Amino acid sequence: MELYIDTANLDEIKRASDMGVLDGVTTNPSLIAREGIDYAKRLEEICEVVNGPVSAEVIATEFDAMVKEGRERAKIASNIVVKLPTTADGIRACKTLSDEGTRCNMTLCFQAMQAWLAAKAGAFLISPFIGRLDDISTDGMDLIHQIRTIYDNYGFTTKLLAASIRHPKHMLDCALAGADVATVPLSVIDQLLKHPLTDIGLQKFLQDYSAAFGG
Ligand code: G3P
Image (cartoon, rainbow, N blue to C red; front, side):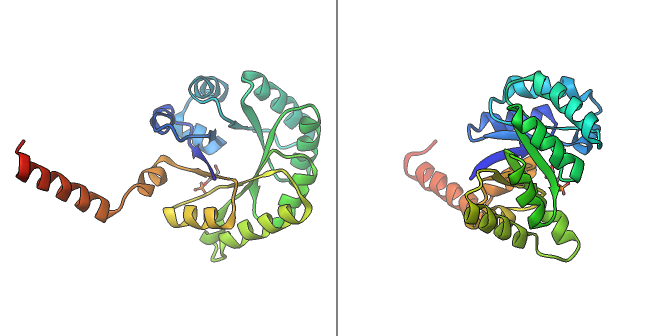
């Protein structure tokens, strides 16, 4: 499973990138608003740090404007992936941009047949939102399993990118379900390495060593 970071914060991206295990970045209008910076400028900065796919969402919601904005975003760097909402206009824009050779990430996917249409339109990535489905008392992981099955049944090559991941258990379940990519905030990446027995064990190793050899 590939690891993307879900943020528009450059320091967080650099920290995750320095670990040497980061495969890409996803951004969205809310994340950019939090940074209070021009979207195109921040995308340029991100693409200087990360070579892997960097998802850049369009703000437009109508087909013509989406395609225009998507083409502009794609010019920023060769690793930009244009992110579009999984609406009728978004699917149409995905088909147009994908046919031109621009990779698209279809976002705000909440049911499996949206993912099926995205794959038919040539999407590079599909982004089902787990946490937001959990938030409304449904099981977001069901959607991951359904999309995996549908994509495998028909040999679709669209990558299943699990999004709206809130904790390490979501990550574990995604890996077991065969998600191709998980995009997570830095706080979740940090949590992946936290275990009390790791900390206790390390402390004991160092104490034992110091007791025997000093220092
Ligand atoms: O970037 C899309 C998605 O990961 C958002 O997550 O936590 O805002 O539902 P969240």
